[in-house]
Picture 1 (cartoon, chains in turn orange, red):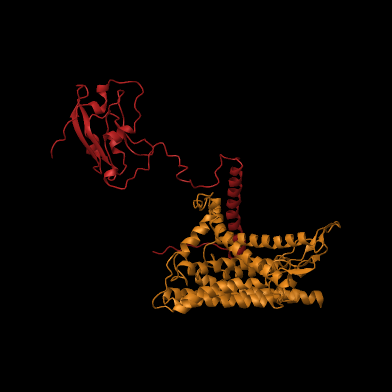
Picture 2 (cartoon, rainbow over the protein chains, first blue to last red):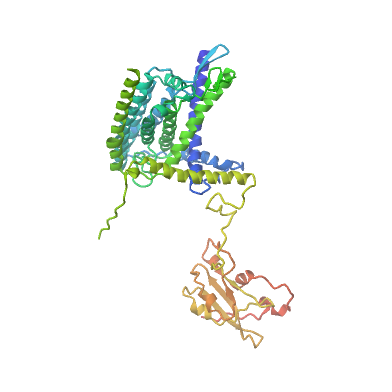
Length: 360
Length: 192
């Protein structure tokens, strides 16, 4: 039975992520359209069914990409060329194993944990897996036997390594406060109330850390304004020699990384699955009233809260993606190394000082 | 000569964040305004305010400017025959040389001539409207409002007298059969 629950949770997380990815593709089209006073793709139908505000366009894309020729450059490395999109997609998907989609609930005598893998080094695991994902992008550039693709792969590795340092340094402030790398425990700790009414979410403790982490996470997703590795409008990046479903896998891994960035920001800074004043047995409002709820309702509310927050951050990332122009390469490096890294180190120092003064 | 542009940026602009938030407020403002309008349209409200700047073309057409030059038409007399007197003014003034007229003798001595053939090759036409300006009889106009005339063949782009006349409404009252354009004496085309 425990195995069945574990399988169901894996299925839930996988389908949630894949459905989110599918919806993001639609959102990307429609949100950008509405932002720019347009309507967006709305013509595709499926056997005369209603157009569903353009949802069928995703299926049309899928059919087109599957039936397209899968071209491997004759001078390229066949094996690496085939395996690199798989590496990119695999490591993007596998990072969700430690993201807590909900808390731990006991239902009808069974323990249901909405986290596939309860690791006490969950955050390190996410960073490790995200760094492994770079291999997919570098290898794709290398295996294409194309100088432009190689340069794109080098840009991707340069950008991702630069911003991962900032990302890692930013999180240290949070680790000092919560004293754990376990994402589930970080989420539980964010349920505490300050002064009895203000939920102590990470963003209140680390506002600078939030801005830095959000920017670095956006850079990790390789989307505008940090889309120099891809540069799909003109310079063309590492996936230049890819077509069909292999290209689509890179593109899916980008969307999944967007979801990952949104869920990491949610988990670390916005309380994860925490709903303000909602504990395991119901709402405990600061003015003293208590509203008891069954565990199942609490579970649905908390998982729903997590998905809602992730959706909000996906929306925000899309909003930024369709508002800002792209950075130049030198601006990107300058921002990463001379502004964000020093700021994140200052953040660590200030956090440490405050912690010493408060506790020492 | 290089133009040196000095853009004053203070610490406020260079710290990125407030300016980014300002930009995002603008785009988000557009998003939520348009979303609210689209949602209102679903419930049949606020139909007079558009949620988008674009037109959904085949179903919805942009209003044309009243002075826009569109597909030509030949106007008719009260009896339905063309007003054209085959004076060749339009053919002469046409910079694209896309008009081809063959004149015939009209039975009415006051009219003298009428066009046996009046072809416009719209594949050559530059829509300059000189023919309309040149016409002394107000026989050719470019006010049909038709902007989608296309064809798979070059021949299909040549509009003849009948086609151009058919774009003008036929007068309501009955006219003697002999005055209709197709009943006028047909001339054989002069050999080149």
